[in-house]
Length: 539
Ligand SMILES: *[C@@H]1O[C@H](CO)[C@@H](O)[C@H](O)[C@H]1NC(C)=O
Image (cartoon, rainbow, N blue to C red; front, side, top):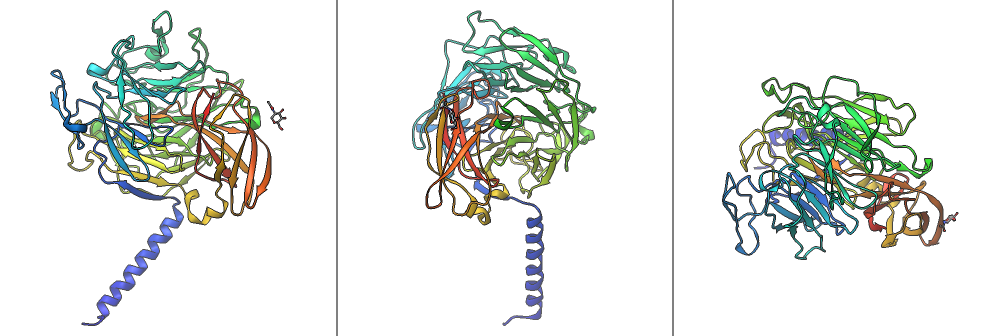
């Protein structure tokens, strides 16, 4: 029939639209990639192991997932309110690259649980709901293709039921578990000799009302002196965890919104920097919700559009408030290997809870601590609201999984149970930066405290200074990456040791307060462009 004028016109319009779209994309950095259409479960808790695999966890009493347990196994739980004979998995191991999942066996309910990796790389996962509320579970990871699985501790249990608690690996290698619904205390795994939980009245003082707390999943950050910064609702304290003493009450964060679950903002401790001797720790808290958002979901009240910055180690700490480009509740915050903080996922109205939010925030935003600026990133098309997660991968991408605004696996609009796994690639991954991107050639497997080491990288055409950034792997759930920390290591010297090859002289973190013994991702960075990390055990 030939090419009719109509078809030509349509082609011109199509081309024009594509150009416009490309221009819009140029204005919004970063790209999105769908990695897996169906992970089998909607991950509510996500963590990257030092084998580069990613643990996804859901909950056991949510009905059948979409992936079966191995070998036709089933789990019988006469007390399960939904499915007493369940042959599906509620945890999987995801392997980036092939983008495959392997079902894992979890026995008790991990719903709204907490976690942290200990020194040997084992994920210590604690609490949850129902039969899981006092459970301690271990996942000792293995290389992709292995058969490692969850082990639930039959002997030792948490002192009390902990639902919506936050964990932090301490300098002595124990895991601290802070709070939980109706629980105003903290405890340790393994338990201290006294075995007791330690009272923390701050968690009660920041309570709004039972069932409408706005102070759950407290933001816990270990400062360079080993003391804990704990933020709940709008208030924060400095806790000496060894004595139980509250050393400092910080000023209340300005604003009327609440920052913790269910209002659900997020928080990071900005990277600790050798340039100032690792002495300065600045806390960033972003987003959250209106105090009535949870109790009055019909109103779909606007989420918070502000962040607060607090130099927690200053002599007279004060909050500096910043305006974000978007309102955001249930956003995740991740420390990127270029030194910026990514805000990703969430919604612009409502709060956490089943179907209590709307107007998803599809654009991530990158916060630059150098000038406190925000840069809007390219949008995804997949809403990530209640029970969604994000983690940083060693290859510098951000993995996004989960979202289930219904209590069970249902796939009705507007926000279905979300089984798709995506990756967000910040702009630094663009091919145009390949000539500047460092590739690790020779790396240590382990680095001691204060011990000198070298890292040899290849860079085709370096254009600026090198940096080494050390990031741990947090346990991400309910918009808070528990235990997340990043250190900028010192660089003494960079020596050319071959064609396009550079050997960087550095040293490990000075002490365990700065970086508790664990596996860390060591990112080489050149002129702000990070390369794939190498895992090092800091010990
Ligand atoms: C590490 O290297 C730096 C720079 O060469 C040097 O000043 C320092 O003494 C070394 N430290 C140790 C523990 O060897």
